Length: 181
Image (cartoon, rainbow, N blue to C red):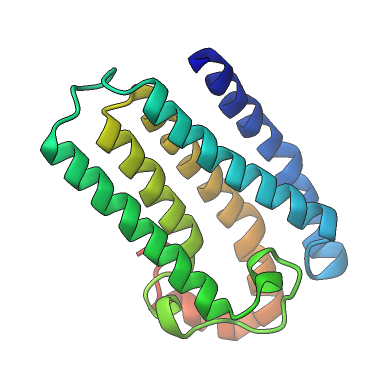
C-alpha cells in the first residue's frame, strides 16, 4: 500500500507540469482560470494532501521514532496550517477566488497583511507537520516536493499574472508583504 501512495504522489507531481502550463495559459487568455483548470487544481492540491497524510501513517517511524515532542510539534504545525488556510479563504470571501475563477480584487486584508500565499503556507505547514508527527521519511519528501512545486508555480504563473492584472498595486504590495511569511 505504501508504494501505491508513493506512486500516486509521483504521478501527482508529474501532473503539476501540465497543470502549470494550463493555468498559465488560462491566466494569459482569460485573465482567470477555466472551470476545468480550477477543478484540476483542487484535485491536485487535495489529492496531495490526502496522499501526504496517508504516507505519514503508512511510513510512520521511518525517519525517527515518533515521540511526545514530535507529536506535539507536528500537531501544532498541522493545526497552525489549517488555521492559516481558513484565514486565507475567509479573507478571499469567495470560493471562486480561492480557485482562480474570479480575479477582480487584490486581497490585502486579514492574513494577506502577513503573507501573500496563506493557502500554500498553510498546506506546507500541514504537510511538514504530518511528517514530523509521524517521523515519516516519505511524508517529509512529499512535503518538500509540494513546497518546490508550489514555489515554481507561484513565481512562474501566479505572480506574473498578479503583476499583469493589478500592476503597480501588486508591486507595492510585494514590497510590504513577503511571499510566504
